[in-house]
Length: 130
Image (tube, rainbow, N blue to C red; front, top):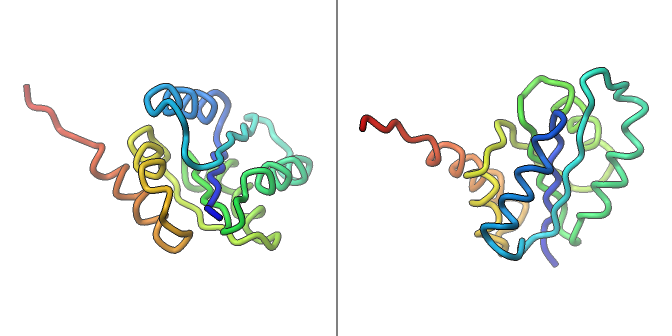
């Protein structure tokens, strides 16, 4: 059993990041899906769909939910989904380095993956003085 990964983002971000990560890694080792939240979204109306997406990626050990901006509608929806019963950990500031780092450690459990995700984001930000 493994953790699943659910990206809850503003439109266009999650699917694009999954496509790029899939192209780079050839095969995503963790079950992953992107759920887009429209700008004018009714979060109550989206909750059942987001919950279904969460259940689809759950590999039996819970789900790591990655959001683009903390406090935005996707992040708020992620907070609601996290209260529905499936073990969930949430990390915001989604980036390609974060997603790649998570996918490179598929053996980690839900207790370790959030720190791995955050490290991917931190270590992926490089000031290039060239």
